[in-house]
Image 1 (cartoon, rainbow, N blue to C red):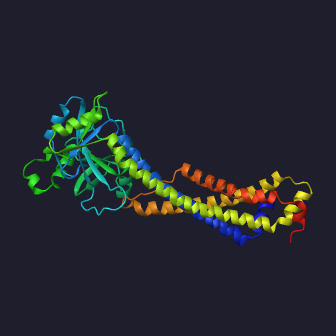
Image 2 (image 1 turned 90 degrees about the horizontal axis):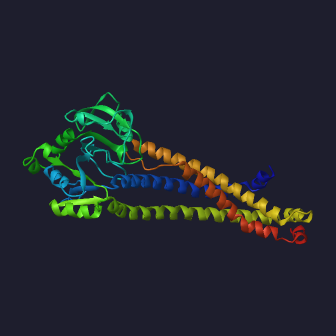
Image 3 (image 1 turned 60 degrees about the vertical axis):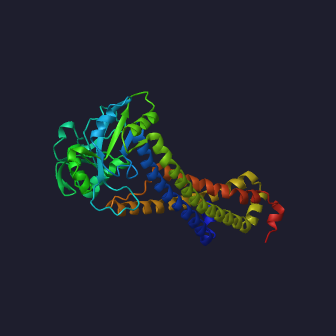
Length: 388
């Protein structure tokens, strides 16, 4: 109670100091939650591309920008070091996509089980089932967790994807990565839909089953993945490859820069809050000089004086941390809810982030109180008693 009374002596000053820390922790929570979401997407991509190669057409810059002739799949599968070559079709779930920040809903089609059990990024259904090889030729679909919630997909009920009706047979467990925003179809159905989207000149020279947008290569164990990627590009005309190592190099550096910016902005805000604590505690020591002198005169040790003042500073930091966490959690929740309908879920507030935010603010308050507490403990008792 005495500690709270000390903090309440100057209510406005204490409140302003807590507000400064609150704003800093709020910034830390919001920006860290954004970094968590981006890092989870990147980590999911790294896991997906690990020990495999993605082959696309190089004309549009790769990444499934233009279709690949399905006949090339057989040529790739015949190369030394290729254990399996799985053709896939991928396109936006909506006919019109305006771009923007966030993961757009995707449609992906492939033959279930074509990887022969080599896929390490395993998807599991939370409702219904996954696609099977027997689903080829049927209009069935499995929805990722986010896209199912946004679009109201229900297992056992029909659902239209780009004007074509599919029976929903499964909904996936959340992964916090790209599959959450993906609708999975049998390859043949996806090829027929993809065929309608390619330019007329392409449609005039091929059939739906002759088009794929990418080929996923599973190398045999011990194969030099980089060398195999080079052989594929040399064998398949106008092809582009992407390995797991290249994905990490391409995305990892950008994410590192983004995280550094986020941490820098949050730390600047926290430094301002720390300076506010130092100012508040220094003023508190000045106002309580006679009180401190009395404590020293009746036998109070310097260690006790330092401990009391540092605990006060720590409580200020703790309260500011709790308020900042609460404010940040509200902002994260409202932003995610506002973006769910468009698939723009940008934040991921984890327990680790929450604990770090409160712990950091408390430690910041304690450290900011060290100098004022040390100066208070060094006061001469006689001089302190005479202080006006």
